[in-house]
Length: 382
Ligand code: FAD
Ligand code: UDP
Image (cartoon, rainbow, N blue to C red; front, side):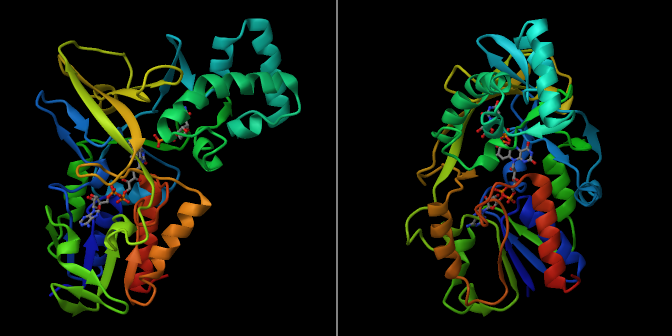
């Protein structure tokens, strides 16, 4: 009855479903949540404010292919996303850039440090904080120490429970020091929000006569994996199976849980037009939460009231209701992941795709690209 079964209706599963359906396959999508969209899901809250239930999501990409692909299913509310860090009550632009430099140092010193940075790295360059800290010039190291202490150390401790040195350097490398006057958080040419929200974009993507979506269905109730085959409702299934959930949970965590960081989102509606005057403020030296997002500034929505969300990170334990958000990249965890992956090695046509199933830190656009790549491979066009 179905040619392909996809587990998870997030961006990975939804793009894959659409691509396979357009290639003429009958596709079943099983999603355990009550809704599609995965972590990109948005909805109006009780006060009519469009919120992102699983944390603020800003689409950004330099990949024309990913942008064009999603543009088939949505128009865009385009904007250059900016973030401020609250450092002892003062708001400064993050990533740390030359504007930030001039805000935190007196003019003469800032001019001198700017010259050093430009000479050392060149205008428009991007320098990871850990690299900046190793620089031979003591003036540059002074900036690095400021940035490390005021932007990275405490925020990273909250987010990961570890110092910037202890985590994968690629993580802090996502937010490099910018030798430029660009205050935007991302420098990619395409950035913004689906005009009518993410959920509406996902609805359009999954609206295909050959895609059937079953929400509220844990795939493990219908699928099981033996050494060499997949059983669907107890019968052998030989079509493609694309799994986008956590790999350990597919096997009842038999080797132990893959570690993840999770988040608690505390939403608050305020009967005032404005709370912080901007979309995101990172709390980099104080508070237990990492950041506050004010949704109306992300979506451009006009409303008399406003909804904000605070994010409190914690270690995922697998308890009922917890959601694994961030894979924790390190050799030990990768080895555990590989043990689980080997359990699928003998089964043809089973693919792991997505932030959870691949145990990797992907943005939305990278997920679109990976899903297109995989389905091209399945369709035999690459
Ligand atoms: P998910 O969205 O997690 O989808 C997986 C789906 O599989 C889920 O819906 C889950 O319920 C379902 N599932 C799992 N197991 C089963 C099962 N057994 N049966 C049935 N269904 C199952 N990226 C950006 O580009 N920009 C951003 O601004 C951004 N902000 C982020 C903020 C936060 C707080 C987080 C956590 C991530 C952010 N990301 C952002 C990353 C983005 O969320 C991911 O790249 C994207 O959601 C990954 O999509 P996915 O389909 O792999 O996973
Ligand atoms: N980070 C930080 N301070 C900031 C912003 C980011 O220390 O103000 C670090 C932190 O370790 C974070 C990482 O840089 O996990 C990557 O930040 P990014 O905003 O890309 O994380 P996301 O919220 O997208 O997962």
